Image 1 (tube, rainbow, N blue to C red):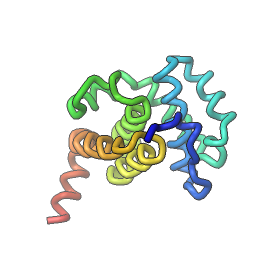
Image 2: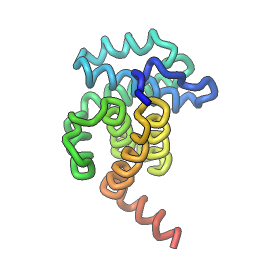
Image 3: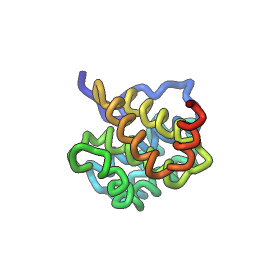
Amino acid sequence: MSAGTPSTKRSGSGASARRRARQAALTGLYQWLISREEPAVIQVNVEEQDVHAGCDKAHFEVLLHGCIAQAHDLDAALARHVDRPTGELSPVEHAALMIGAYELRNCVEIPYRVVINEAVELTKAFGGTDGHKYVNGVLDKAAADLRSVEVQAARTGRS
C-alpha cells in the first residue's frame, strides 16, 4: 500500500476541529519537509485545501509555525528514540513525530496519551502500512523524556 500526500487522502468529515488542525499541520509540514518553502507560503497553500476546512485555525497556525521554528530542537528530542536520522524518515512519519513532539513540549494542557494517540491516528490515515506503530513507539519513549512526571504518574496509577 502506498501512501498519498497528506492532502490527497480523505480526512474524515466527522473529525474534531483540533484533529483537523493537526491534519492541516501535517499537510503543511509534509510540504515544508519536501520543499523547504517559507512557512507563510505553505500556510496559504494549506488554507486553500479542503483539509483546512473546519479546523481549529489557531491550533493549526501554532503547530505549523511552531514545528518549523523548533524543527532542529524537535528532531534533537526525537533523535534518541529513532533508528535512523530524522531526515531519512518518511515525510509523513517525520511530520507526525514533529507534531507529537511539539505538543508534548509546548501543549501541556493536552494529556500525553492524547498527543500520542493523535499522532498515531494521523499516521494511520496518511502514512504507510505500519508507520503508526513506529510513531507510537517513538512518541511513547519521547513522552517519558518530555513529560516524565505525567508519564510516571500514569504508569504508577496503573499498578
